[in-house]
Amino acid sequence: MRFKNFTLLFLMGIFGLFTTNLFAQQDASIAPEDIRWWIGEGENEVVFIVNWAEPDTALAWGYRFSGESVTVEAMMDEIAEKDPRFSYSGSNNWLDDIYFNDGYLDLSLSGMWWLYIVNGEMAQLGYAEQTIVNGDYVKWGDESCGTVIDPANYVYIWEEPVVPVYPLAEEAMIDFADILYWVGEGENEVVLAVNWNEPNKCLAWGYRFSEESVTVETVMDAIAEADGRFDYDGSDGWLNDIKYVDEEYNLALSGMYFMYNVNGMGAWYGYNEQTVVNGDFIKWGDESCGTEIAQWTYVWTQTVEPVSVYDAVNENMTNTLSIYPNPAVNETFVTIENAGLNEVMVYDIQGRLVSNQSVMAKEGEQMRLSTEMLTNGVYFVTVRNESAVRTAKLVVK
Figure (cartoon, rainbow, N blue to C red):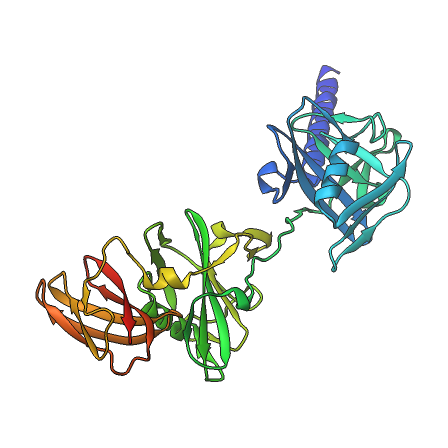
């Protein structure tokens, strides 16, 4: 008899353990670290989940707050304020409907809703009075969203996987008319923007060309040749780094880059094969520079700043360059400060490269620079070598 009773109790215990584990395994939820969008500020966190039945879709937001507790209504109101895709309607503590519309999903479920907190048990108060604390899980849904496991107490579990809601973010752009530094010539125009994440800085150049299309490599090579602050390295279509150095910034970001063109979509080919056409917007950066709005899809919210023409030709004004005579009529002489190979570049007032030559020179040697082919006006002469960059303004008469 004892044996039978012991066996019965043992089997009941196993069955209870089994059903408890089954409940834990089947009740679909999401870990706080998997939440993609946290709304609000503070040290306390709750997870907010809504499950719609047609189609069966469960979405989750994270909510942060600083007080000891907040009402469910306060949380939902702030989420609705920050996320225009989400809204709800109700009165007298009763919820009529919850909506979500992102242009693809159009979710609504009019009728009775059950509120769950923490462990799936039904909340005792309406949403305007029900308070929640750090670590709570708030779930909205109805019986059609789940499987009943305790009908007497209205306990349901959800089997539909919970998907995190991604934040809304507007892709940072720049109008072509706001680009200050254009490289190349032609009726077609593209913009190249590079975003560095330490510090988070996004700079943009313009490139003009007459062909129907050009490769990204062509654009970058032309900018690197014209702008001594900009450089990059890579091979076989893969980029290792993009660099930008001036008096204020020393920017570099080694590692994996994601390329976007036109509308922020990732390019299909390496930079040596990817072609762009008139009106395209090329962006370089990595995921740390942007906001993830879908899996492997990022948008940049960092303001895109145009590279200044003045900065482009005055790379290091503290190291001035000696030029005489200045103003010049037919010729002038540039003093080479550093022995070895020097690159001598002349830019017009619009930042366009009009002359470029490399010379081997001794320290202090004067290099003749012909100005016969230059129209009257203001130019900038830059001498660059391994150790320094020097620039000076040149007036041609």
